[in-house]
Length: 507
Image 1 (spheres, rainbow, N blue to C red):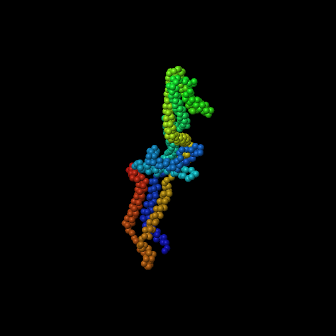
Image 2: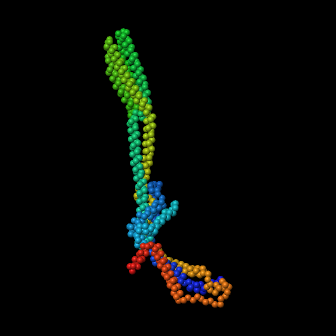
Image 3: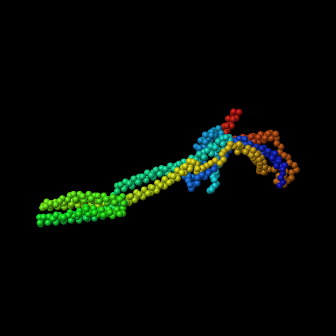
């Protein structure tokens, strides 16, 4: 099958209306887009996340949020409804079209602002590219600068607030732990004051004192027995002879013997301990007490007389000494009972005191750790306040755009022209290929196997030609108007249509 150029040119001429309809519609749409699309200017700015200016091993910041995570937080805050609407109100930005609603303005702002975070990975810098689109170059520059200011302000506020909250938290912790430490200390002091006689550190003294009191009680009881025997012998002698033998010397009393023992013990302890030792002080106090008791006993001795008077005097002296010994026995037994109760209470007091001291040590450790962390938090806050930590800085400031970035009107027109011609030709030849009719002599030969002698073409009348031309003209005009309406609706919705109608009415 040979390619018949004259036949296809004839087909194109015959279907020229369809070609014009398809090509004109595409070209009309392209021209409409090239004319009606608004001019867009774009302002760009670049930011960089800089590392801390102070080495972390010397003084670390308390803000440990990753740079990428922090930028994502700032990005979400930027695209928030309230932030974008406030930014639009500040810069007096309007949405395309006559009808202004918050939702349309919000979509317009989100489409106009791009915050692109470019993280290079571990060991590489993190960059932030900011771009702002607007129909006026000054407005695009203002939006870009506003976004840059927002990012820098949010970064500073975020890091300063986090460092401040960390410092405030540990400051409150130090105060709280200090109060609890004082409360435990007061509880320990109160417990020691309430159980001063049964504390663990005095256990050895109480055992020694218990042994001394037991020995003293045994001596007093022996002396009490001796005095009773002496009184009985005195009465027996007087009853048998009627006389009494006045002793040449008064025997040494129990108090005098104990005084000698305590003085000996004091001398032995002075060889080991100093004068400020509690045991030395107790022994000296006991020596003074026994000396006073010995002097009192000596003052009560009455010189002996004769006869019955001597017996009475000696009996009275023996009775007085027995009363003193009874009183001493009562005092010693009372003190031993107190010491015994203190000794029995000492283990429980030791356990309770150990628990209080353990709580105190634990609380002291927590307090020391909190103080150390407070110092670290104060240093971290100072680093953030002085902007010496990780921060976002401007690498490339936004400048006033000199030329628009869109639309490329020449490219749109050229593309529409090329696409319109191609689709017009494709529509003509596709329709021709789908028609199963005889249109030329070769079709008769191929179909019926006959060779025609001559062919008579179809002759159209003038009215048919006019109707055909009118139909295709109306179709082309309707297609252009439909395409124009679709573009306007896609750009601005009904508001744009109303704008066009009002502009036509004014003219």
